[in-house]
Image (cartoon, rainbow, N blue to C red; front, side):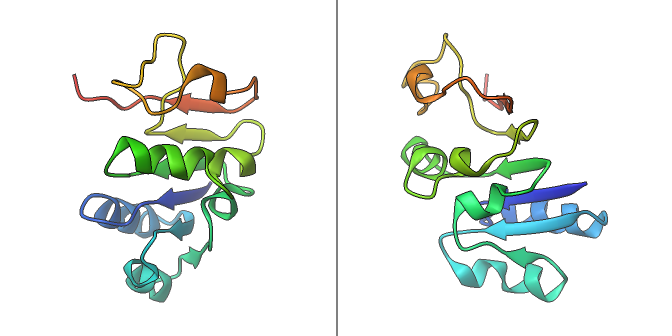
Length: 124
């Protein structure tokens, strides 16, 4: 399985290292290129944008700190959603008719019908 990972901070860094250690083909992205240095040295590939991170990946995981950053990564220029192939699973984002800006930075209108899966991870 090939995996993309966006957000290599306090949680994303260790999680992405575990993905790589488990033997998955991994492409990573972070706003700070140096956050990927250890992963690249261990065999991960670097993607310059979220869109590139999603290109050709079966799963893309995002581990991002705030709703505005999630929105920028998903919907911004060269955003992740523009680069996903049909069938790609994207944990840690939410597109749902029941979403509101208080529970999700991604409004339903921003989620056109696509054959990819967006899986929510929410604190209850």
